[in-house]
Image 1 (spheres, rainbow, N blue to C red):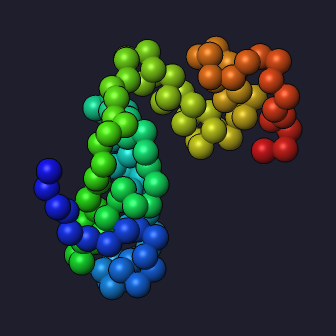
Image 2 (cartoon, rainbow, N blue to C red):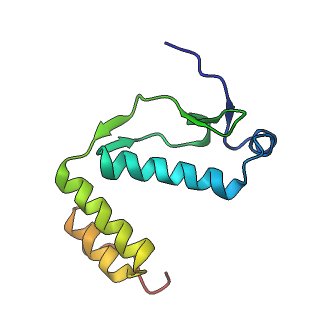
Length: 116
């Protein structure tokens, strides 16, 4: 086991001390997450603020890999379709069809896409 220095991402003083704009730090986290899932097929199943540490220069360290798994190609493709439907196209009916088709939501689940 190795100690990783850094401060949790929910430590506002540590975030501000990096001197890196918050939007840039957020983009780094998002880009890393998407690369892990879409490129490497890797999922970190415990993504709370304590498992992401900022270094003084704004580098993000990921820790606690106890809940990591690899996605199959089909799961990765489904996730990419989910992101495209929700974040790019804002097509929440399509998003629901994707997650129902993938078995993540029962077809009769009382969730509405009308309020999105």
